[in-house]
Length: 269
Image (cartoon, rainbow, N blue to C red; front, side):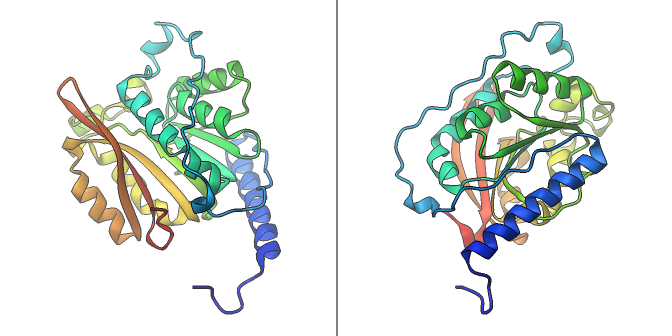
C-alpha cells in the first residue's frame, strides 16, 4: 500500500539518482576507486516482463592461467550453477532495472562480468574481494570482455557505509566446513574455507543485508547442504527476507543450491 505523503514517481527517481551518486562518492572516498554513478531508466514492474528464454553469455576468461589459479578461485561447478540461476532469472532482473549490481567474493570476475554483459551500461557494477590477486583478475576479465566493473579489495562490506542502494547482490561464499583456523590470510583458501558449518563468513554478512539492499533489492546466494539452509532461511526471515530455491545440483559428494532472497513485501513470485 502507498504511504501517505509519499513522493511521486519523478521525485522518487531523482531521489534514487542522488542516492546512487552519494554511494559512488562514499565508495570512492573510502576505497580510492572511482565509481561511475548511473541513471536508472524509467522503472517498470518486474511482473510486466515476459518470461522468455534468455541466454547469459559466459565471459571469456581463457587468458587466466594455471599460475593465476594458484592464487584465485578457478570457475567451477558452483560458479556455473550460479550463472545458470541468474540466466533463468534474467527476465526478472532486467525488469528490475538495477542501478547498482554488486558481487561479494568475485574471484575470477566471471559472474559480475556476465551480469554486466547481459544488463549493459545502464547499470553500475561493483565487485568486492578480500584477495588482492582476485581483484586484479576481476578487473582483467571485465576488461577482456569490454565491460566496466569497479573493484574494491575489502573483507565483505566492512569498508562501506550501508545506505540501502544495492539492487542486486550476488555471493558465492566460502561454504566448505573447515576449522576456523583455516580462515586466515587473503589467499585462495579464503574462497572456500567457511569455518563452522561452512557459515562463518556468510553469517557475518547477513546482518548487513537490510542496510545494504535497496527496498526492492534481491540477493543471490550459493550454499551446500552442510550449511543448513533451513537455518539460513530462518535467520534471514527474521531480518525480513523471504527465500526461493532456484536450482540445485549434486556434485562430488556435495549438494549445491542457489537461493534468492527478497524483502517479504517485494516477493516477485
